[in-house]
Amino acid sequence: PTPLIEHPYKAKSSGSLPKANIQRFHLKRDFYNQLSKFALGHKSTIYHLLICALTLYFARITQKDHIVIGTPSLNRSGAKFKEVLGMFISLSPLSLKIDLEKNSIELLKLCAINLRDTYRHQRFPLNLISKRLELIKNGRNTLFDLVVSFEKQEYSTPYGGATISAQQQFSGVARYPLAVTICEFHDDEDVEIILEGSETAFSQQDLQFLSNRFCYILEQITSFPETPLRQIDLIPKTE
Image 1 (cartoon, rainbow, N blue to C red):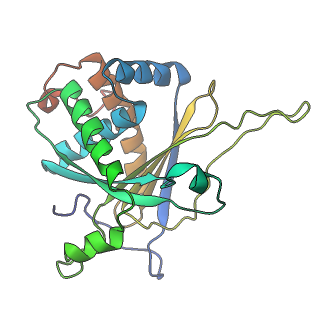
Image 2 (spheres, one colour; image 1 turned 90 degrees about the vertical axis):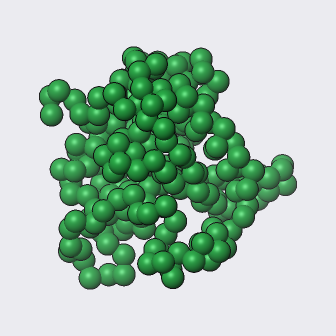
Image 3 (cartoon, helix red, strand yellow; image 1 turned 180 degrees about the vertical axis):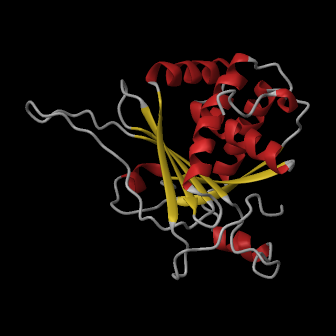
């Protein structure tokens, strides 16, 4: 597919990679639990639902019916690899063809099916996919402009009377136009979401708008699950 995200701004840095603007926000735990319950009721997960909200947003604003998203996975097959120290993470392309006449439930099911198929090939090297598609020859340096990472960890272990809190940190360099990281690090606390946008694609204000719209779309697709995707509101009335 053609690039998803435009680059209307000039890079302020002179390095090989542009700097990243970072926007942090939270989903309230009660709301997050409602989203999880909704997804589970449709044989999906909260990760599928979050991807659907982003997919719907970019499909509508770019008027594209084919969205490709980078999805990280641990890439550890079997007990042997799970006990080995080191990084085995792979990045796989999730391909979604969007029909705006369908509703949120149908998009959710499509995402679940396609992501399951993607995981079956998670060990296939991304550089070979890029080579076979001749991305560089066609003026592309990456297969996808959007990466969505879901990180569920448990950091609630107490040390005496001290409590533990965890926060994801970033390098400040943008490897992709937009990376979205969902951090569920405590079972009873709000869930942090971080938008990491390239300075050439998103200003800080753009990311703030995107964070508000993301939360609003989640409310819309779960409140009106049978409404055609074309009719879902994308922008909060407060904006």
